[in-house]
Length: 316
Image 1: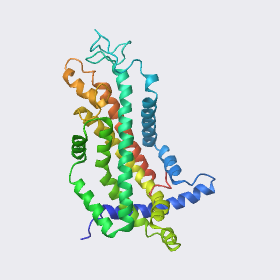
Image 2: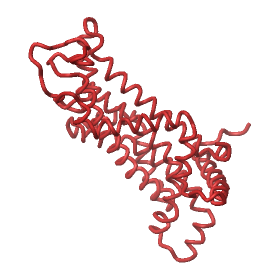
Image 3: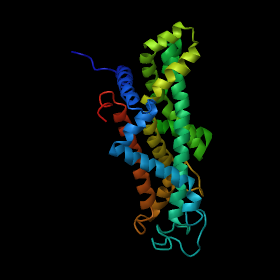
Image 4: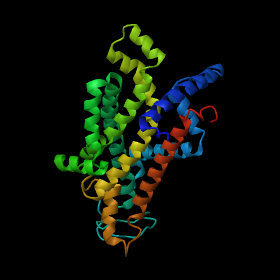
């Protein structure tokens, strides 16, 4: 009976297939006078798909809302309107008010900042730690590979959200501590994926040629190997962003994330629990935007995966 292929074997095969298919696609793009940059090609193919368009639009709206929150929000998110607590949605308050008389629409708009900051910081930190250590483990192998991977194997024995809670318990609650905790929890998966890709790329002809020309190990990793791992890591980055946003909302729901009075979608959902029977509209808006964002990020990750699939590159 044949053994099932491992995740590392699958990733190495995908790296080889992607390199060959991308090369063929780049030749066609050059013949048509278009850019041959692999990132540009991947984004162009992603935009051609419906899921990709939806995901890009959702992410763009999140970024725009977070940046333009002072302009879009009708009120200060911390401003309390006395005597107008728990007002139902109306023309004056489109989403109603909370138990302290604060405008929910303004708080939902400003809450996008917490999700964006947590997602970007967590993915950036997790990528720096995971990709760099995975690059070293995959390229050098030997003792370095064994030590790094055993550390990550130990971290993977804990669920990511439980590991994040443990880090926050040691560092204290807060938005930036949440981002650090989520980034640390994400780093093992990124390291293992990077390592599996590097194991394939380090034996390719252009890497061997650079090694024969006298290039140092650091130059080999940074100049010749790292740029070719990034297209395959794009899918993981999109998935990690979704996990980071969800984890930030969950930790804020538990009181470990963004602290009052700073608005957070998870914190708003937690506040709405006491009013579900009489004011069911309270938690509807933050829950809905959080769900749409997560769906958009997952659609974007699926579209990127299809755009980078070596068997579908020429068909998209």
